[in-house]
View 1: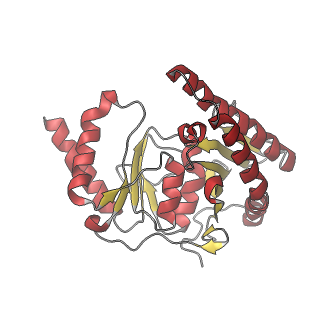
View 2: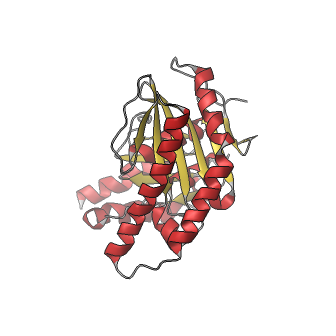
View 3: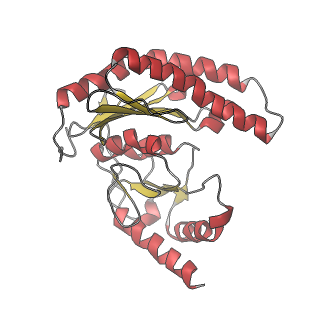
Length: 281
């Protein structure tokens, strides 16, 4: 069952073929990621600079593996990956890859990270696969075809009031310059929301919203590779992903709100209200 219908023209069968290929190789990807995490998390960082280098190393190592994997299978497709130079393709497809989202968790040995394969056609997201190795979970979607977890259809929650909602809060790594705004956001949701949960992986949080485990997330400083795959998975599960003005995600946003769709407008109104109070002070 499909939640939404395509609003753009794109080669559906070619898209499905690519998404199914990633899914068919998910077990190998999971095995490789678990092996590398075990190796990397066994070494304790002595300084902040050392830990940051290991975080970048995780992205580089997994990125190299997945890029070679994609190039071998689809040599004409372009590839955009974190910490890598873009690879131009010779057709209209482009992969948008986040080799490990939640890289701090990854190098610390925490079981909360995700691998994201977004697929775009003419720069518009049309499909995605998110693999969560610690849970052996594979989320997937093709625009207009519904969203799946391990082959089973998923839907966002039916929560319709903020006081029943579980949120994932916005806590960017570099936040000193925006602390007043962040505290205003948190105070608003602390007042009206039921509870907070945060995994440290925006992509994993978004997948949990897509399957109805959580209800919403708001986030700053999101990158293109963070959003490409989950934007399709979430929308196909019945959710929404927009900026603060309600503009739908297609090619990237400096800040976004993702939700089950039902409480989306309430979240936008709450954020606008608390931030206007900050600007007046």
